[in-house]
Each structure stands twice: as structure tokens, then as C-alpha cells.
Image 1 (cartoon, rainbow, N blue to C red):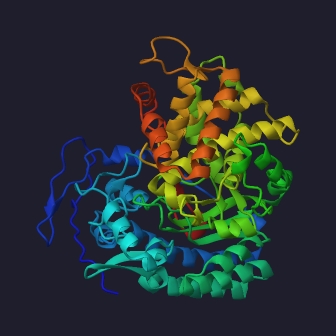
Image 2: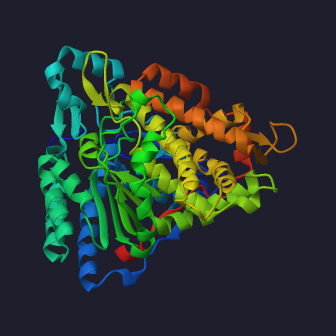
Length: 559
């Protein structure tokens, strides 16, 4: 397929000092300057070895894993191009080895995901639609075109198409065609892995997912993934829509190759059975409650072996809840996967150190990893609760993400966080969670909030956390522990006000999703999804603490 011409020029050597770097002109006459503080930025994501308990896999399992890693590397190349078609050539010209190259790889391109996609190589602003749409296509242009060509709506809004111009027209090109050079060999590796495995459920999923790479029909393989039951847990394909900041319509490719920690998984099985009761307990009007979703909700605690694509850029995923296809969720349910070795590393490197510095000393003895782990788990459980499909004024039944457009990801992540706390309270009240109490939950939740806001307010998780922080501060659930608010970096928690504030914010978020009210969502984010002077002051005291980790996977030969 014909590709857009690539511009690529970079500095010949990474800047390791505070002095402005020289520039180098390559080919096109364009100059690219690398940010002089790139070494400091790279240090925010320290290289962290992520290994797994090798006794959890036999020789056959390790052979299967090797094939899955090979397939994942093809998926990684797809995601590079979904971010920007200029990425591959620019990556080739980056100085190696250098902090600049490392940070380019960490961000999957020249835009700093921890600084609202600010360019750190060159000055080009990141297109809101990444490489899913023509760079000059605006929201209004796209919506006017779709309105004038309703027969092309599904083609252009589809999760698995790239939008391009054909003269004055817009066309949707299937992923299977646009990324054929990478999806074809990835499918081959999946079939090879399927031929090796002795687990029938894994064989079925891998073969069906290989078919999906060539057909763009992912539902059969999503159902097969829900039925996956064995020592290997693998996610590979197009899922999350965060990269599409124009509409949140387009799915990005990613891969998680993991091994199941069976003893830890067995401990959590009881939670899934309580999901229908949690849905009924949500603080929203009865007419909005979604009691029709599939009730299957397997939970897996796993150890990460390798990741690629959207799963390996910027801040690393600690857990996920899939599939995202609301049709499959209603028919089958969803699966929650917790990456235990990654969560351990995150808590040690940044979570606990931040909480110890932010919380009033009287609260720090209430911090607990169990509360952090379970809040992440219930965050993922909560993605499967609340509105899924809604009926629009014209009678059309659509997924919630359609009317909320580019705001959906932030609203949904914020909802999952808040409902995660609300549903944990339900679980504690009904004896499902007993290893920590309500005060420990509220303290750990408040203490680790700056871990997420440091991801960047321009990112869905970071902005969603800003909404929570500002909402809770406004209602007095979190207050400075001493000194003027502008300089306070230690905070206390009012446990009674916290409960009420969590309930009220949950109601607001659930109502926004149930009604698909874009304007109401925008008003909430404009008021609360911002970085205040107080937040900046707190963040300034945390600069020596890593923001997150950068994984190094020995199982893939990385060192």
C-alpha cells in the first residue's frame, strides 16, 4: 500500500548536559532538536526487570511463549505506525545508544506521553487522531462527511479501519489490508503456537485470532478468549481506543503474554459471583442500571512475561478488563487480568514512596499493598458495570463511547476508579474482602492518587484522577494537614465525607454514561479535570520519585 512520504531528521547525539544540543539536517532540510533534558525524562521510567516464576510453565509452555513473543513483535510494529507513519524512519535515524533513543522507544514516537504529548524531538504537534486519520482532518470535517454519506458511517467509524482520503472522499481501509505486512506473519506465528500447545482452549483462541487478523472479525476470537483456561494467558490484537484522541473510535494493537498464577487466582474467584449484586447496588436511578450483561467474569492473576504495542508505551498497564466489544460483554461477560509482578514493581518504585510523602504522618500506618491491589482489581471489575449500550434521541442503539467521543476514555477510567472504591465498600460490608478496612482503603486510595496524575493530565487515567482529586478536595474529603493550601504537601482524609463524595461522583459519572451527554461530560472535565496550583506544588516535591517503570523482559532476551 502506498504510504505517506516520511520526514525524518534528528540530532546525531543525545543531549546529556543542560546545554542546548546542536542540530543536524538530513535530506529534506528540516531540523529536529531533541529536548535538552531528555536524560532526566528517561530517568522518570527506570529500567526494571520483569521476570516470572519459571516453574509455572513446562518445556512445551515455554515453546509456545517463544512463538507468542515473535507474534507480539509484529504487533509492536503495527502500533508504531498507528501512532505516526513517520515513526519507523525517525526511529532508524535516532542516535543509538542514547537517552534520546530510549525515550523515543518508551513513548513510541517523538511525543512525551508524560507531558501531554509535548514534542521532545522536533516541534511538530501530535495529531489528535494519531495516524488513524489524515492529519489535516478536523472533527467537524469528519462529522459533516459522515452526515452527508450515512452509508459509509460504519466503514469510517469502525474500530478496525484506517481513514484516508480518496480525492474528495473519505474511505475506511480495513486493518487487515493496511497492516498486512505485519498481521500476516503475526497470524503465522499464532498458528505455529496453536500447533505446539497441548491446551485445547488456547489452541482454539490462537487459531481464531489468527483468522481475525486476516478478516477484521474479532468477535469469535473474543468469545474464545473468554473461554481460555490454562497456564498461559495471552491478549493480542486491537483493543484500546486511547490513542485516537479525535474520537476514541479506533482500536490500537497491543499484546500481553503472561502466565497464570493459579494460587493467587483461586483466592479471587468469589468476587465475580457478586457482580450482579454490585450492579444493583450502584448509586444511580433504576432505569439506568444495566442488568442484561453476561454474568461470566473470570478473574486471572498473572505474571507478565512480555508486552508489545499499546501495552508497552509510556506508563505501563497494571491490570485490564477485556474484551471491550459491548456486544460480547452483553452476551458473554468480561475477563479481568491483574499483572501481579508489574503491580509489585509499581508499588515499590513509586506508589508507596509518593503516599508516604503526600499523606499526613498520622495516616501512613494505614497504607497497605492489599488495598492498592484490590482497588486495581475492582477498577477492572467496574469497567464491566454500569451503562454499556444506550438509545440515542433518534432511536439508534449505540455503545456509550459513540456519543461521548474523545471524552469517553477519560470518563470511563474515572468511573472505573470511583466505582472500584464504591464496590470495594460493598465487598467489605458483605465479608468478601477482609484483609483491610474502610479507613485503610480510603487512605491508600487518597495517598496513591498523585501516582496517576503524574502520568499527565492529557492522558485518560491522569485526567480522570485529577477529576477525583479536585472533586474530593472541593467536598472536604481530602484536606491539607497544615500550612497554607498553596504550600501544603501533606493531606488528611475525612472518612465520612469521603464516603459521600465517592457516592456522588459515582452517580454523576454513571448518569453521564447512561445519557451519553457529551456536554455534561465536557463540563465535568473542564471544571475538575485540570491541574491546580496546589497539585503542581505537590508534584514539585515528588520529582525524585520515578513516575513509573520501564520493563525489561529476560524471557525475550532483553537485558
